[in-house]
Length: 342
Length: 267
Image 1 (cartoon, chains in turn blue, green):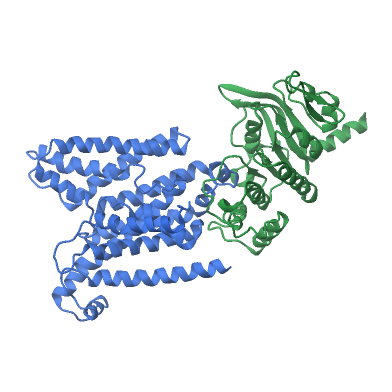
Image 2: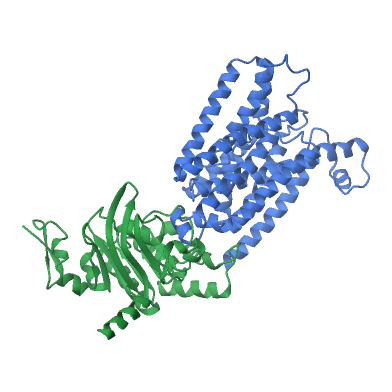
C-alpha cells in the first residue's frame, strides 16, 4: 500500500508540473508579455488588445495543441509497445507517419506538376492536414487488412515497417523530381509544428485525441492481459481479435490526427511510456495511461518552450527539440538502472 | 450389471472434463488421434509421451487455443466451444511454457492479474479479490517474494508465481504445460507435490504435461500416454499392468521395470 501512496503523490506532482509548464508556455514567446498580464488576460480581464490577441489567438491554441499532441503520441506509443510487446515500438511503427508524409509529399510535389489545372493554391494548412490524414489512413487501412490475414503480431510489426519503407521510397522518388522550393516546403512540414492551428482545427484534434483516450481506458484490462502474452490474455477472457483491432484503430486515430495537424513529431511516443514505467515502477495500465497522458503533455510543453529561441522571432523545429532534449533523458535512465525495464 | 450401469452413469456426471475420439493437430496434419479422457473433479492428470508426440498440442486444444480436427471436448457436460471466452476464463486457467512479455512486474501484480475475469471494466479489486490474492500468496509461499520483480526470481520461484497466478484465477481446472522443465530435481518434486496438494485440498482439477514419467506415476491420479497409436488413458496401476510404458521408448535404449516403476538404461 506504500506504492499507492507514492503513485498518488506522483500524480499530484505531475498535475502541478503540467499546470506550471502550460502557464510558462503561454507566457514565453517572441513578444515579451509580463507574467501578471498573461494571468489577467487568461482570466478574461483587462490586458492590452494586441497582447490579448496574441495570447488568445496564438499562444493558448499552441499550448493546447502541445498538450493534445504530447498526450496523444505518448498514449499511442504505450499502446503499440504493449501490443507488440516491444520496447522499441512507437506510435509510428505501423507506418502511420510515413503514410502521412506520402500524402503531404503528393500534395506539395504533385501539385507542382498539376499546377496548370488549379487556379487556386491547394497547399494550405487545411490542405496539408487533409492530405496527411488521407495518407495515414490509407496505410492504416492496409495494415488492418493485413492484420485480418496475419495471426502473428510480430509479423504485423514487420509488415508495418515494410509499408513504411515503401511509402518512404515513393516520397524519395517524388523529392528527386521536384524543385527546391517545393522540397523546402515539404521538409518544413516534416519538422513538425504545434503552432498555427485555428480554434476549429484544435477542436477537431481534441475530439480525436479524447476519443483515443476513451477507447484506451476501455482497453485497460486487455492491455494488462497482453503484458503476459496473447495466449495468457485469451485464457483470462480477453477478446484477442477485437482488442487487437481496437488498439490499432485507436493508435490510428491518435497518431493519424496528430500527424495531420502537427506533422510527424518523433521521439515523444517512444520515450514517455518508458519514463513513466520507471517513474511509477509499475506495468499496470490503470496507472500508466493517465501517467503517459500527463507526462506526454508536460514533455511537449517544455520542448515547445525550449524551441522558442530567446529574444528571437524564429522558432526551432519541434521535432529536433524533442529528440535533443529527450534522448539524453532516456540514455540517462538506461545508465542509471543499466536495463530498460519492460 | 444394473448397479455397474448406475455407477457408470454417476461417474459421467462427476466428469468435469471429457474428450471423445479427440483428433488434434492442424488441418494439414493430424498429430494425435483417438484420445478419450474422462477427468474427475479434483484429479491430477499427467500427459506424457516422447518429444513431438503432441503433449503441448493436446493441452493447447483443451485450453481452447486451437480447434480440434475432430472429436469432442466437453466441460461440465457442455461443449468447450459453447463457452464464451469470458465464461471459460472462470473455468480454465493456464500455465504455459511461452515466455511472458514483461517480467517487469512484481509477483503481487502478476498474481493480481489472475483476478481479471472477475473484476469490473477498469480492473478494481474487491475485498474478496484482495483476500483471495493474499491467501494465494501465502499458500504458494510467496510472502517474502511478493514485492520482487519477476526478473529477479529464480526459475523455480518464477514457476511458483506463475502457478499462483493461475490459482488466483480460481478456476475448477488448471492446465499446465511442462511446469517442471528447467528445474532441478528438488524443485521438480516441490512443484509437483504442490500441485498434488492443491488438487487434494481445493478439489481443483490439474492437467499437466511432463517428461518426468516416473514422478508422474507416483503423483498423478490418471495419465494420458501419447504413444502415437491408441493413446491409453487410466490410473497408473492399470497402465503399468497393461505394459503401456514398456513400449514407449525403443527397447534397445530403455526398458521399463514394472515393479519399481522406473526406466532402466540398457547397455
